[in-house]
Length: 252
Image 1 (spheres, rainbow, N blue to C red):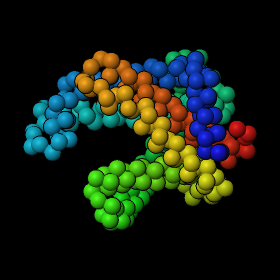
Image 2: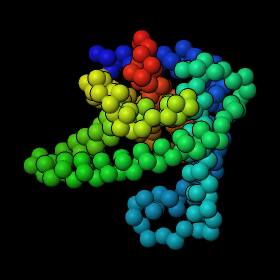
Image 3: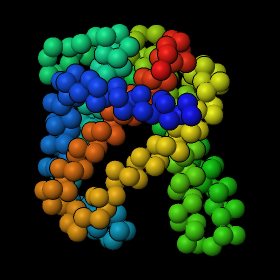
C-alpha cells in the first residue's frame, strides 16, 4: 500500500526529526495558539451562539480581533510550512527558533492557498450536491455521516493531487495546479488510499477531545493544541513526501 507508506514516512519525518520540527514550528505555533486562546476567552461565548444560528450582536472589537486571529493563524501556518518543506527537501536547517522566511515565498504560498481554497469550494459544492441527492435513498441519519466523509475525502484527494504546487513554491521552483495533477497521475491510487488514511487519522486523534466533558478545560485545550500541531506537521510532511517522490524521484 503506497498510500500507507507515504503516510508512515510522513509521520517518521516529523517524529524522527522532532528537534528540528520543534525548532522550526514551536514559537510560531505558540503565537498562533496564544491569539486563538485570547479570542476564545474573550469572544468564545459569542462565537458559540453564532455557530448555533442564534440572533446575537457581536460585541465591540469582535470582528477586528477575529480578523487578527485568522491573519496570525494563516501567516504562521504558511511560515511553518515553507520552512519545513525547505528543511526536508533542501536540508536547510535554521538555527533560530523563528526561522527566516522570504516575503516573496510567503506571498506566493498565500496566493496558491487562496486559489486552492476557491477550487475546493467549487469541488465541495458539486460533490456535496451530487452526494446529497444520491443520499436521500439511504435516509437522513446515514446521510449526516456519509456525506461529510465523502466530501472531505474527495477534497483531500484533489488537494493532494494538485498540492505539489506548495513545496514547489517553497523551493523557488513554481509549478501550476494542472502540472501537479499530471505529475501525480501515476499516484492516483496511492493518493486515494492516503485520503482514506488521513480521514481515519483525523477521527482517531479527535476522539479523546470529543469525549471530554468540558471543551474549555485546560487539559482539553492542551490536548487540542498538541494534536493540532501533529496534524499540521504531518499534513505538510505528506505534501513534502509526495513532491519528493513524484517530482524529484526520491525513494520512500
